[in-house]
Amino acid sequence: GENVEQHPSTLSVQEGDSAVIKCTYSDSASNYFPWYKQELGKGPQLIIDIRSNVGEKKDQRIAVTLNKTAKHFSLHITETQPEDSAVYFCAASIGTGTASKLTFGTGTRLQVTL
Amino acid sequence: DAMVIQNPRYQVTQFGKPVTLSCSQTLNHNVMYWYQQKSSQAPKLLFHYYDKDFNNEADTPDNFQSRRPNTSFCFLDIRSPGLGDAAMYLCATSRRGRWDEQFFGPGTRLTVL
Image 1: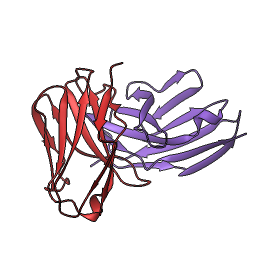
Image 2 (image 1 turned 45 degrees about the vertical axis):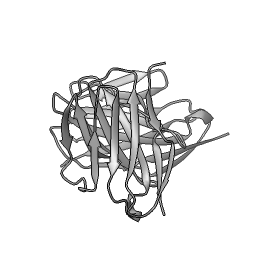
Image 3 (image 1 turned 30 degrees about the horizontal axis):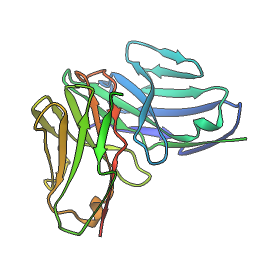
Image 4 (image 1 turned 135 degrees about the vertical axis):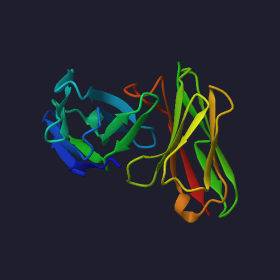
């Protein structure tokens, strides 16, 4: 089955700095790569996603890049703010046509300090 | 607001005592998923429904069952909870699947005494 590795496990940045989280996946058939933000006591919330036919996607301060050849994808957050502090999960999915079965990375705890 | 609702938010049960967790959605999505998330770990897919079609993950223990009586509701039944089943249980929905966004509920935290 699919295996997703995520690094780093913890990341501390100062407010205004950039944060980068990296993930690798094992199954070349994976074709959908979402990123989720999970705050304490809440369910994960999608922040950005990318499909295998796209190399980069940006939404305001958040961007994701995908390298299919190397089987890795990264999340970039610029101009970090204290409210960005949370656990971030990458995921990979082999869409079956009837369901998106996500395999999650192990998570990155991001702490944005003032 | 359309959303995914899970009840209860916190559930305490005794070792071996059956427990049922509930999920409802107002999104009218076709697919509903159940994930188990243990402390400081990633969510792990247990099973999902596409409409009434049930799809079990190969490594989901037999102790875990699910029911989906209609589009809006889905239940997770744990027949004989063990201490290792203590976790956050997350329900999620998506429209057709494949590349569609999954919307997660807030989760039910299960404690087994």
